Image (tube, rainbow over all chains, first blue to last red; front, top):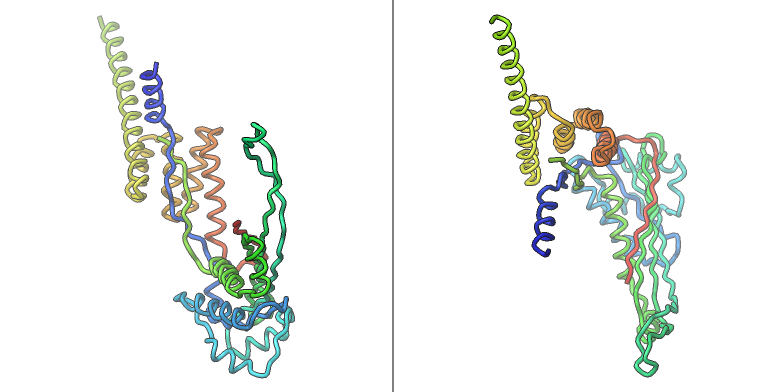
Length: 228
Length: 129
């Protein structure tokens, strides 16, 4: 009986009529890289007032560096951007004004501007979850409530590529990155007292990478079903 | 006597046709299986050559579906769509062919997506503890 089952299984595997094969699929950029070749990334603006300048500067610089890696694109460096923007005040939502966007694009002499506003928030949450366990005293499975302390980190990046001629966004992406950090009572108090910027920085970098992936041509691996 | 010879000649012609068809089907199947083995190892150009040979012999739904995948791997999306549609015309209810066709249509759009009108996307990513 067992031999028959093994034989049937082998026959089923051997006679499988389809097979999955991976193919590389080219994904074009979300923007026209023939038309937009030079970029300037304006300093990212903090909407929440909770992000340190160092984190904002870090993710803005990362955006410049990643776009600069593309052979087709040139990016105004951070130093030049800072010197040209000296004295200028950049507020959240400024880039929604086409006139201002055109002025900045003229200032940097680029085809497109990259502007973003970020916000960051953390919430300490106490969760009560039912957990089943076997009780030797009662000789049966009992349900208990387990208390978990979780700190949730939210990083939102609203980022856009703005055309220098029209001053209008040609690509816009709203990315929300979330991280849930488990705690106990002691570490929760410690995290409240000594807040770290490392998580915000990591979430910001993750959001920037997603944006870069959307605007850079790249390949993705997909599976196709082949018949035999 | 001439009538008997005529019957024998007709029978021989029919037998030759049947043998020829059977041989062709076997060769199509052999080319197809070989192409699948090549594609599994990422040798899509060679696989496409085998499937094209099988298609030249008459092909079947399997061959056209696989040829579609090979054209897709070579970024020849119009040819891929045509091949998938041909496979579906021969086997209209095959869910694998339908899925491949849909994916190819989507990828054709993605590959040709440039200078798109202002588009907005929303992405949410979470990382659980």
